[in-house]
Length: 212
Image (tube, rainbow, N blue to C red):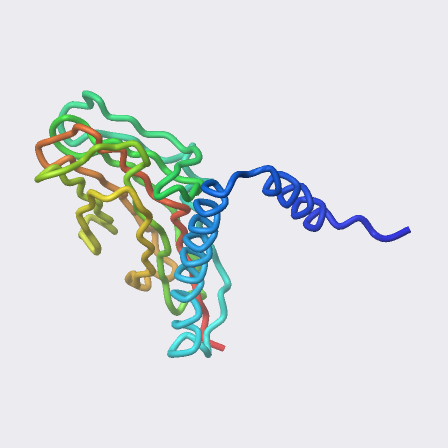
């Protein structure tokens, strides 16, 4: 008896369902598959480019997952928490679903999710990988923008503004902080207009490397 292959079984089930689709749906499915493949290649290329450059002689030895650590994180608003929503769950941007931190900012001020932890002492390089997006269904337009910010030990190290409902991927360097306590704050701000600010962070993680 042949070994059971769950991946092949899943593919077979998908193929059976595809065979029932009409022509227009098949065209849409083809476009969606192309988009998913592009997203996957973009995400992996961020890591591959680094490994082929200066990261080629470094080994990944430590990982900190912000979604797993969320139950211990501190949640706050810099002003009033009106309409602020913070939680962890699946989020879809541009029809691509990811596990994410939901962080709808309040009407005024910023939403803050704060993590405190200690970085291992044998880390030579610290990086952060994540995606940001506005969930599908949001109707942001005109000057309605949402700000995303990352602060480390009180210093802003990265920020962007976003309006489109699609994921954008990032891989950034952080201060080394080997053997030190660190405070990382993920922040969103509606910049004066909180309507449709369905802000989400996709799978944020810290990556610690050691020189070989």
